[in-house]
Length: 221
Image (cartoon, rainbow, N blue to C red; front, top):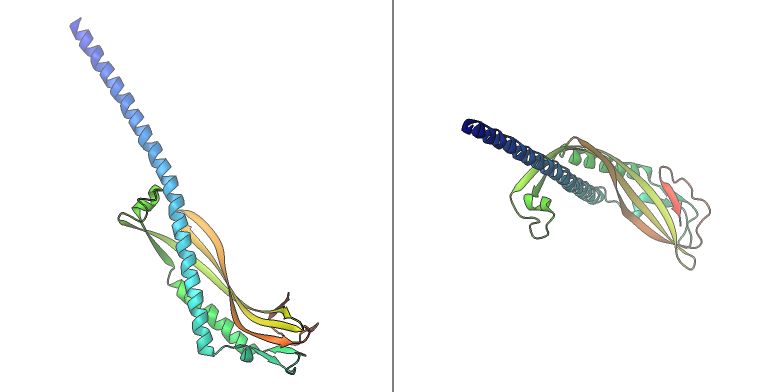
């Protein structure tokens, strides 16, 4: 009889232990899945923000350097056969425009290619969601594949600036499409930046047509 009681207690203890272990296992698994989904969202946001910042910096530096190297200004971008009171016709300086576009596209592409294996570092406190712990703790590196495609366009814009005055701006629009492979997830987006290469005030009415603006998109506001 005593032996049966001991065996029953032993079996009951084993059953309880299995239930406790099962509960602990399920709790740990649920916590791990929750943390994984939460951390992945935070990490993806940090990687995307880092990639966009790198793109913007590369484009800004390239445009500034290229303008200085090619001595880009309104006078060598646009040719006019009008007089000081009007602009009868405007003609883009195609060689200068093409040189600017080619230089920007090639240089930005080369700079971004160096980030093919993009590394983003963040502090472990940033994934807790706490403002106090944010930016604290050891650095954790995250690596992802980074691909990009750069395109540049010259845009000619006209806008009224007062009585019989028109502002003509020559704008450079750089669009960078990029793709990130983050933790078995794919993210695609683009970054567009506009730069004023030169502007001039034209005295007189805005002409109804513009001659020989080859390769330049024209926008009249």
